[in-house]
Image 1 (cartoon, each protein chain N blue to C red):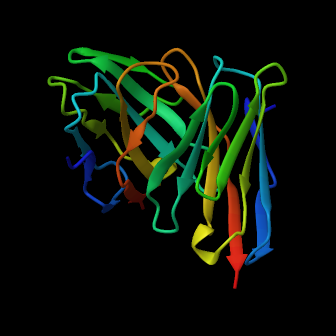
Image 2: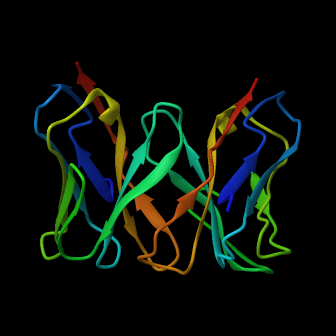
Length: 107
Length: 113
């Protein structure tokens, strides 16, 4: 069993749709990262959260520490949101990553 | 600030050749990491460093070596390249351990044939 599992693996949506990506983790201390990997390969950090909810523009991330589960939501999705979204659970000195969710938003 | 820079961006190696992937950060971060990303798989930690002169193995260290002589630089050495090392390599840095944001370099796409 992977230590960090994401679902779905692939997701295709129409522009404007509400998107949800889920992450469950079995390791790590009480925080979770959401990362975005652009089609060109670069990786940027979107959120780091240890409780509740964070919002950044059209992106919302929630976490339930007790259940070791987090969700990333995208409201009013746009083709430029097309990317791979990765959740990661930090340990003491390292980070364990999910395999990623490939999101394609069609115009 | 340039953040985390990596060179080269692309490289093709023949089996048995060696090379060094360069990584530099200008954020004065103590923690630096090397990851590899295989298609359809999550990033895997190869080596990490908690400061100049201190390095430690990650999840997949075999076939690689690292050094950390300065805070800024964290090169990754591949000795006797093998096809299994074909991957995209990312260097990252963070202020400290645990729940701190990691900043990633642009990646190096390596093919071993």
